[in-house]
Length: 546
Image (cartoon, rainbow, N blue to C red; front, side, top):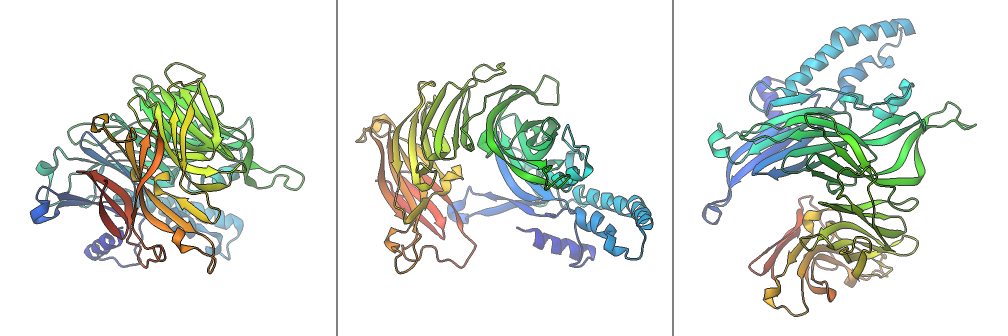
């Protein structure tokens, strides 16, 4: 969000003006701050360093006290390479004259100028931005392409130069010794991606990036959704992460919880819902390629292996199709030897996937449970990850959403998973309820309770989640007393179920959604000394958990 300020400073320094353009659309798009909090009670937050970086912030991971920030920037090909050679710029030229002129412009002017400018933006020589120690060059990634160049141009858009992704690392162990003039000692690695959609996953050894794309399958004459993978190996002593592996899996993952890595095995849960095909029926013979909804979606977990001293993930195993006709994955969690997958269209099949055999080519699915509604986030309640607390939505037999739902699943017996307790926040037809914890797990806080405390009701823990509840009817039928915006604390008990413990309001029922500012606090809760601090919209509250 600081790119305009930074760009103005750079333009002033270099004598440019507002018409100056950058090939990286998110040039100087992110600023990293580090604050000293050791004297916060007397000095407040003390800014000790900043660093500007190219790209829009995608995600960050902290591994062994090293921050790894993933940024992505679209590449502006249109202004540099496409617009100058559009036919309208040569109204009087014949086709042969136009082709010859365009080819000459690309070879002698446009491509060299584009390359020089992009290189200067990424490899900054004036010390304003981290210069990547490693850069992966442009690549199509797809192993198979169509014989029809028109199809590939439609599918891939900007092709191999769609975006530039960087992994920016800050080693907090070396921070104070390595600062120079308030600049953070950020090191960087980068890669050109043929996708602008990105997910990231990290364990202690590697950061894996997944970008959406397509791969042509000649067997079905279609472009199949494919996630292309790139792995960056973490290093020590403040060194940049090294790009070491690439690969691909069919379909698209839901979120970062759809990834997991154990040793050299990478496990990815994906869904194939649509693909691109060329219409060849009587009305569309040799017609355009279209986005086609598959009659049966495909959901699977694919296991890839990175061979020793190899640089490509190789497929070694896959589950059978998960879910019924038309269903897609709504939740997935990996726990060592098991994974849990939820799919949904009208009902909620809950699957237990056995990953204990690392060499299995056909991965077994020993357990399945079909219930109404669906789950969107699964949280382990015990060390064995056999008791799961889930948040999602209840639904009727037609798949119509009814209200926010909490569920406790028991997968102690993998072959017979069970939903031992379910709690629907509301099931009123004129009210809609939701929680940001459905799609943002950081807003979901489960606090285990020690049995030694002797709390009544055999309480295993407290669940604290944001809740937004709104009557959707129009005035005068609208009942504003049903509106709520704040947090709810629930007691969680394997024996006695889920019960509401307290509500923490962050807004009046009649005007909680009235706001004229975009400066909103993210939904988060923090527990300390028997109190819970909650942040939502424009307020921060401290409440005794009782």
